[in-house]
Image 1 (cartoon, rainbow, N blue to C red):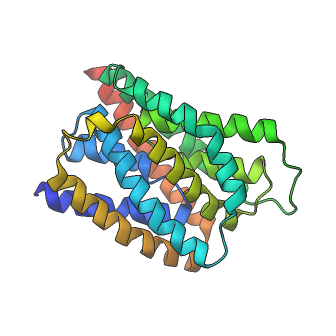
Image 2 (cartoon, one colour):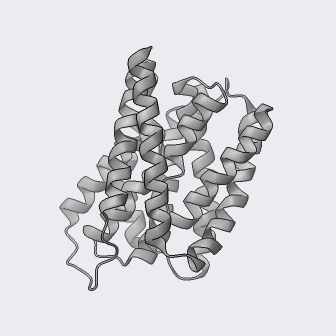
Length: 249
């Protein structure tokens, strides 16, 4: 199977996840780029940031049109992660490939368990605690910068649990957080984009954008918890594969 066909298929799945769940697509993009398309871990995390940033903007527009984005809250949350995302992006190029792979597998497994144990949205808004919100935003920024993930799989639970945003609005707001964090991390990786295989990255991104629109429509038709559980199981399998691969090398 050609690299372009694989890129189109993988991009569609990642866009679908981003559009439907408000996150999670990036934690599949990195292993897809590494194991299906032959990217190095550093190149894969850089390409993932680019793909996720573009796709998240498209999904954000779709959610924003329906009033499902808390713009001021999302910008405040994302602002706390901008600096850490930039520092993490600079650090990623200095880490061994095996370290990035193991760290990514650990984050993917943690995200999957988070999805499996999530209880859904809160019934009533809770009091916003700026310190906790800033800490959560900074943590997401660090993860984004180092591992090339947008952080939406962690942003949604944080927005619900820390800020008391209802689940549907948290999904839309997380896309804003993902976009800001991804762009901040990309700024520190500008020198690494020259070596990307654009013949693969371009169709991957295009398919992800189209998938995001389908994911938005899918989220309105199917139960969110069911989609979340399926994605979590797939994510656990990916994490296990990456961890075994890193240990055996």
